[in-house]
Each structure stands twice: as structure tokens, then as C-alpha cells.
Amino acid sequence: MSVTTDIPARLDRLPWQRWHWLILIGLGSVWILDGLEVTIVGAIGSRITEEASGLGISESQVGLAASIYVVGACLGALYFGHLTERYGRRRIFLVTLGVYLTATVLTALSGNALWFYACRFFTGFGIGGEYAAINSAIDEMVPARLRGRVALMVNGSYWLGAAAGAAMAYPLLDPSILPEFLGWRLLFAAGGVLGLIILVVRRIVPESPRWLIIHGRDQEAEQVVRSIEEEVEREADRDTLPEPQGTLTLEQRERTSFRELARTIAATYPRRTVVGLALFAGQAFLYNAVFFTQALVLTTFFGVSSGTAPLFIVPLALGNFLGPVLLGPLFDTLGRKPMVAGTYIGSGLLLVGTGLLLQAGVLSAVTVTLCWCVVFFFASAGASSAYLTVSEIFPMETRPQAIALFYAVGTALGGIAGPALFGRLVGSGDVSQVAIGYFLGAGLMIGGGLVHWVIGLEVARSSLEDIASPLSKKAITST
Image (cartoon, rainbow, N blue to C red; front, side, top):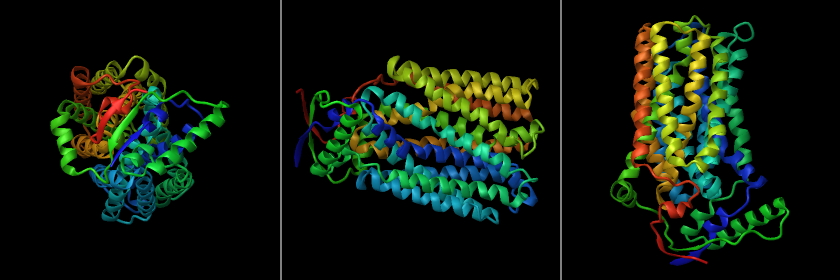
């Protein structure tokens, strides 16, 4: 059945109001959870290697657990990415949050390595599923002119979770406050409490009107958009909104097949596919490698105690958060190409410098943390732009599946091997080996930036439907 709609144009022309902030809080909070999870594991890395913790696994097993978390995230993204397109964004992001909640609470009950591994897998499975559903929903509801800065700010909120995890870890890992076997368990339980709060808030988020219109639910899509418009008019204290600029004629469908997805990615947009893979692989290796083993580096090479190590994550997390927030508006004004390439290449070069200083033995726990802060101020904006890029450059019908595929493949290439490799490098006791790992991560980041500069697209302030025509599109006419 054919339908002509102006819903995408109506959403894009809305002024930014309180309603948008509420949606972002409900949806964007997934990155806070992910940041909390990754930071907790990094912070407790040294503690759970101690026999008194009740777990007593080795440094290499800590790295393996991090890799298992990433494997779960990759598989969860692929599984729930398909379901997101079939059943809608809203239904799936409620399910994935439920999976995360259950798994992270069960992690607190770990008594052996196998239980810990299984819980880390399913925690990642839920978080990975969130990425596909949430990135799709956010980009489909945010006005085109603000999409870059909003997407970066939301992705950057990961680091609010990281800072919260580090702040909670310090008192909970202090053996003078809590026994060694209890504090790290309470950290995981706290993640479950936060997830439960987010689940309640998220219930107010509507289904994506763009998804509804494609899947034959015209009246529901109209009701959702009309409700949004009325809320925005009320908040903006105005009687009318700007006229929407254009209509879209679509052939409605129930689902998008894997064959269509494969043809779109491999045949229709091969250059965009290369860009997405390069960006995801670079940032995944860099982040997963460094942050899953950050506490181990501090305790192994700089004599920082396992109870104090979490404090060093707080300034690092704040630097990571400020990068997307401060640089985000430039992605909409200067454009995607210079900013994506610049943040990737710049952070890679800075990491090379950090590795050289590490090899030279001139860094302390404080100065290496300052170096990390500078590197990740730029790297954080670049990593956030990877999610923005792949959610923009593929058609609406394939958006969650494309996000899931690139996240899974890129993260598998860079994120599964990274933590395991760095766990072994740190375990070697040779700081030069760790520096070599930094050089490898820097090379992948620089490579990703160069790929985007050469063949990436400039899509700042463009409608999603103009960047990649929907597979079901028949015609576009001006109004």
C-alpha cells in the first residue's frame, strides 16, 4: 500500500523544547549504563584478582571477561537489531534494558570465573541490543539541524556513567569501609538500581513515527506526531509551527529482509560500508583496550592501590564527556568530514605521544592520566561520531540492522581482541609492551580518520531521507 506523508519534515522543523530533553534522558541513558559497566569492571580489575575478593581470577582472566562482555554486546546488537526493525524501537529498547538489569544484578552473585563470564556475556547482550534500538529512535526524532551535536552529547553521556562508577567504586572498594568480597558486588547491584530507574522513565518514550508510517500504522504515527507538536507548541508558547518542507511517498511494508540489508550494504553503498567499518574498528579497539585495563596499568606500573585506582577514572571520564559536548556543535556547523577525520587523526597522534612518553619512563600515575585525558577529549568525540555516521548514511528500513552490524563487526575487530591483548601486555610486566599496544590503537584511529576524509560524506544538517533514500520510497515532491 502506498502512503504520502510529511511526518519526517514535520519532525525536522520542530524547535528544540523540553519534550526533546525528556526523550533524550529516557533514551540516551543507555550510554550511562554502558559507561558504568565498563568502568566498574576496569575499577575492580585489580580487586577481583585478590583471593579475599571471593573470585580470585588472574589479570588475563580479567581481560578475557572484558572480551566476553564485548562478544555479548556484538551478538546482542545483531539479534536485537533485526527485532528492532521488525517489532519497533520502543518495544525492543524496553526488552533489552530488562536483559541488562537481570544480568548485571546476577553478576553481583558471582562465585567463580564461569558464572562471572556468563553474567558479563548477558550484560553485554542487553547493552548491545540497546545500541541499535536507541540510536535509531534518537536520530529519527531529533531535528536534522541539531542531529550531530545531540547524537554526540548523548553518546558522550557514557562518561557520566563512567564517572559515577568510579566515584562509587572508591568508597565501596575501600577495605576499611567494606570487606573485599562485598564492595565490588555492591557496585554491580548499583548498576541494576540505576537501570530500574531508567526503565520507569523510558516508558514515556513513544514509538518512532518514521517506523510506524513505513509499517502501515498511519493513524498511530499521526497521533504520535500530533501529540509531539501540541506539546512543543505549548512549551514554546506559540500557536503555530513552521510549515513542513516536503512530502514522502512510500510503499508500506511489514519487514526488511536480510537480502535487502546485504544488498544495501554491499552493493548499493559499498563506500559507506568501508567508512563505517573503519570508524568502528578504530574506536572500539582504542577504548576497549585502554579502559578495560586502565586500573591494571596504574596498579602494575605506577604502584597505585586497587582501592585508589578508581579515583583516576573520574578526571578521565569528565574529559571524555566534555569532548563531545564542547566539540559537538562543530559537527553541525563546520561539518562532518573535517570534524570526524580531525578527531580520529588528532587522538591517534596524541596517543602515539603518550606511548612514547610511557616507553621513556617519564610518566607518573598523575601525568599518564593527564595524557589520557587529552587523548580521549578528542577520541570521545570521534567515537561518538561513529555511531552518528552509520545511523545517518543508510536507509530508514535498514537503520537499526546497519547500526547493529557495524557495531558488531567493528567492535569484534577492535574490541574483542583489544582487552585480551592488553591484559596479556600488562601481565608481561613490561611497560614497553603496553606502549606497543597504544601504537596499534593509534594506528587504527588514524586509519579510520583518513578513510572518512577520503571517502566519507558531508551530511551535516541534512534530512535522513535526503542522505539515504528509503528503500520503499516512490517519489518526493515539494510543497
